[in-house]
Amino acid sequence: MGRRHHHCQLHAGANADVDQLPSRQELLSRFGLFQCECTPEVAPNGVVSCGCEECARWQAFLEGRLPGGPTWRQYEVWTREYVTALAAYMWQRAEQLELERLVILEVGAGDGRLSAYLQVALAATCPAAGLCAIELRCSDNGSNVLHASSPFRDLVEMLPCEEALGKHRPAIVLCSWMPLGVDWTSSMRACPQVKEYILIGEADGGICGHPMLTWGGDTIGDDPDQAAQREHSCMDIASTPDQAQQPARICMCTLASSDELGEQRRGSGHDHNECNFWGCADTLLKGDVLGEVKCAASLQRRAAEISNCVFQRVDLAELSALQLGRTDERWLTATKSRTVSFRRC
Image (cartoon, rainbow, N blue to C red):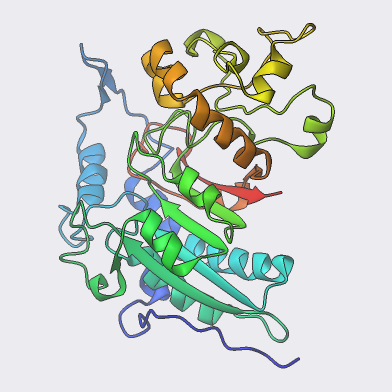
């Protein structure tokens, strides 16, 4: 099989030059990141900050206000090393998935910079023979108007996440700095063509996505090996070290009144305290037990979907080591931004 060319709707080559991106080491040296002797102060409202000149320069750089620096607000600071490594990862996954055509969709793409640079890096790192064609798509709902002044605005298709997933049916979904309190991952998992989604930004207890619905535990859905050992199917919506922070667990067998699953769970030998089958996360977070009863039927349908929709979390340490994000501070010891993959099992 000869070498296939990858195709994409993006035409970013004239404007996006990966070699023009800063290197991570350049930024570390320029702003003294993770190696300074700042003495940050904690305000009465709990905000930690440092008023030194160098910390102010770093914040101005992130906000697009530093003379000679970027003129746009940065959430993830794209570097040569990271974008090149991400492109290499995509080619690796293309080979592992053994697809003739791999569609990658970036949702919540904002100003389109990641897709623009990634497209160039994919072309530059394309392996020799035998790999599939890669098509890169880029979408955003436009709510933050980040694309308006971007040189890559024509690359960004104005579509909400669900519509973009339905239109492009990607095998891999990218999302950088999902808005706080928002979760798009349920739509990603529900799309049957999606084999993997990759989240970039603060993970777990950070400011990206929903702490329960987006990040959950190590496994989203039900592990087939574990399920075989269980008395019934169950779903872990969240898992954190501090169980005191968790909302009360509501065993669905106490809510279902007539369905077969409920009858099985009300049988003798079922331990309600050990049952991991939770109800709707939104009503759990609100402590709304009555609301939970009302949506019991939809939860049973979701349980059936989840049992066939398993994604395993894989922390991509090599990519994470190349990152810098807007919540990084000079006085920290390492970046807070991460790249995390969730792969369909």
